[in-house]
Length: 441
Ligand SMILES: [Zn+2]
Image (cartoon, rainbow, N blue to C red):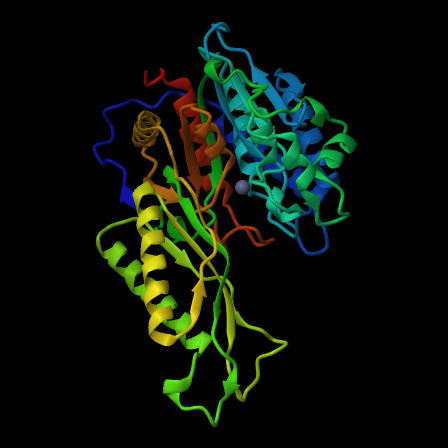
C-alpha cells in the first residue's frame, strides 16, 4: 500500500454546490434499501431473489426521478443513463452489484450504485452536463457463489452483459435454496437466459470509454491506516487447490515408533509451515501476496485420539497481483509436496491447482483518480483488491477499468459492515471529480 502523491494543489477541484444534499440523498437511499431488505440476521438480497429485485426496483425508480434513461438487459441488469453533451462519444460506466451474501451488510455492492446516483443528483443540482453519457449499472448476482453451487464462475450479471456467460454454466449452477438452475432463476425473475450467450456482448464494449466501480473495502487496510479512500491497483489473481489431500497410514498411536509411521497430519503440517515461510520471503521481497489454508482436517469418521492420522484433507487459496508469482507458487507447492511425500512415505495430492490471473486496473485511470483525490485534498492510498469484483470482468473484456475503495469497518459479508457517510462522501466526490474531468486519453 503506497500513499498517493503528496504534491497536491496543482489542480483545482471543480465546484459542485449542493454536494451535501447529494450525500443526504444517498444516506436516505441506503436507509430505504436497508428497510426494504432487512432480515432477522442481516441484509437479505439473494441473487435473482426478492431482496435483489426490490433493490433494483428502488434504484430504477430513483434513476427515473433523476431524469435518467432506464433499461433492463436480458440478464436483468439495470442500466440508468444520464445523457451527456455529446452523445456520440463513448460512454462512462459506473456501478456495482445489488445482491448480497446471506445475512450480508447494506453497503457491499450497493455503495457503488448509490454513488453513481449521488453523482447524478449533484450534477443536476449544479446544472452541469457531462461531456459524454454516464451509465450507472446495477448488476445482478455478483455474489452468485454464495447462492449457487456447482461448476461456475459467479458474477453472473456482469459476465452475461459482457458475453462471458454461456448456457452450460447457467444450467450447471444450482440454487442452494431450491436446487433449481440459474437458467430457471433468471427466467422466473422475468428475464431471457435464452438470449444470453458466450461471445455475445449485450454491451458494445468498444463504445465504453471506461468503467469505474466504487466499492467498500472488505479488509482492514483503510481503517488501520486511517485513510478514507483507496485507489485499486488491481484485483488479485488466485491459485487454488480446492480438494487437496495427504494419504498416509492409520496406525496405533502408542505402539508404532516414529520411523515406522506415515503420518498424514505432520506431513501436511510441514507443507503448511513451508508455505508460510515462503510467503514471508515473498513479502520480504515486496511481492504482493496473501495465502490461506482454509480447510485442514482429519476424517472425523476414522480419526481418533489413539490413531496416527492416515488422511488429511485441505485447501489452498493463494492470491497475488503478480501473474508470474502464481506460477512460482504452484511450482513451490508441487516441489515441496514431492519432497515431503518422499521423505515421510506419504502421498500429498494437490489435485489441480487452478490459476485465475490478476485483473490489473488501467494505470492512466489510476493516475487520474489520484490527481482528483489530490485536487480535492482527499487522502487516498494505492492498494490491491483481495476480493473479486464485477470490475475484473470489464478489465478482462478489454474495457479500461478502475476502482475506488471506501473505508469500511468490521469487514464485509456480514451484517456489521460499517461505512461512514463522511467516507462515502469523500470516495464519491473523487468519482464525481473524475467524471467531470477531461478523459486521460
Ligand atoms: Zn461486492
